Length: 201
Length: 182
Image (cartoon, rainbow over all chains, first blue to last red; front, side, top):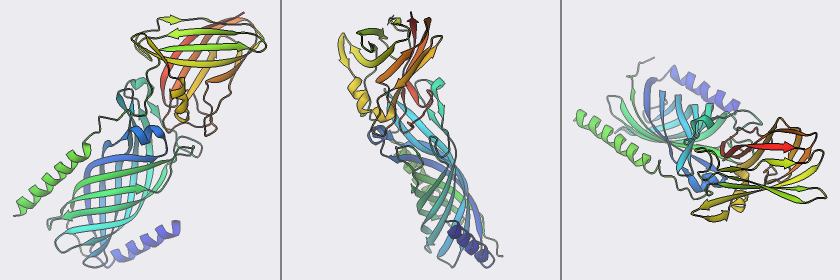
């Protein structure tokens, strides 16, 4: 994995010297859910609404193919029914997408690639009694682990002015629950953003 | 033309956001157990008889204090097996919900935390993952004394591990039970 990441960054750096690197920023809505074998979640797990903000770095290989990365801060988790209300299992995470993106002449784009995630914090928000909110412990023999690798599937549209909208489905490949329960964070993100005009290197 | 494109982008974004938000605040509640408002603790002394102690809390966990809490009375230097039974009472109809909780044992665990009395407690039943539940436990009393037992049933969806502390998850039951060992 480490070798792959170093390889991808080598491509990024070497390409950057030849290509028009563009930078941007985005923000939007996260619809998070969890794939788990826990019966509470399979029966009563619902979308957890959240947000994300982030940056975008686009390194074109040619006119239609580019490598796209960035740094995003956002929410993940699930909303679980409990005695008439929803208990929120909520993570705040940073994500680094490593996507290969195809862009059409009309501005439509689609991409896919690995996602390197890291859970900064997490908590159970017990809606009926805030005194029982519980901060997750992270570690090998704790509630969850921090590292979370997944796959991105990206679709979007960008105007010539740089404004873009995109939808991204992040499917986790990592079971972050060290216990017998499985837990994979999945997120659909709807973003709106702006790419600053490219500067020729 | 450019303004129209920007307008379409914003409108599409807002529509998608609204579509994704649907149903967020209306969970199914399909895997939920009934509220627990009566508890029976059945202590069986090794080589002796059984004694039951009852707690009734009509509005369940939180809210008003229980309407009935029996003082647990045990003999010193004795071994007991405790069996916990939990019930839901609605309009005078009593339904034991122990089997429902047991079916969800991978996300539930009882805790018994003594204070002021000398008693060693060990949960003896396990869920399908091999983690403790607490419907059954062994109690070894020492000398005489008076104190309390913090009795908790923790609901810990996806959080249950083999050696959790008593604050993992959130409580379905949390009561301080008076105890006298004579």
